[in-house]
Length: 239
Image 1 (cartoon, rainbow, N blue to C red):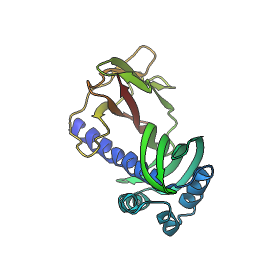
Image 2: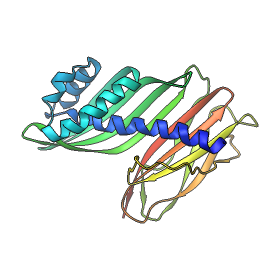
Image 3: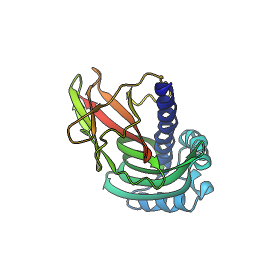
Image 4: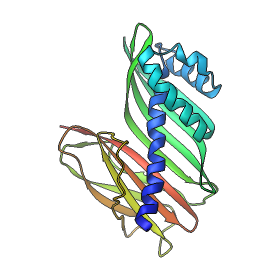
């Protein structure tokens, strides 16, 4: 029963980065790319966004963007262009929002780095190269941080730490972790891994990277009397 609840919450949370990642594909120019996209998203200028895409890119984006708009409220985007090349741009993106799950309201904070490729001043493709998101109960006093590498080698064994400002002692109700490889968020199972308490009052788990290059997404949940925290981090797996 506990595991099915954790898997349900994690599955709901994992839909968020999928939607956001697609929303990032809407830019098209060079220097002002981040500025244009930030303004259009914050002002919800849906029709203007269409002009930034190639037709096929916008078709995919449009459905996912509308789903995100429907399910997440009080959205605020902050976008900065960090690197520019002829047909390639890197953006640092921060999104804050709220979401209702059941009777509870959750606050969302997501930080992502996105690589965007353009063709004839239109968005052709994109890739999220870094992602770290936290969804937590509104007004929860807990402060939770995730400590994990941004990049690991194929087959490497590495540690994930969830640092909690106030030690958990015996107040932890439940915790769990789901691992997704190569950013496949469409096939989420009910199998979760237990997190292990450490001496500092936080939680940790050793993870093995996949044997093929790509990405590994770690999603964890902490259930505590003072709130629920759902945390996701995307890790690059290379040779």
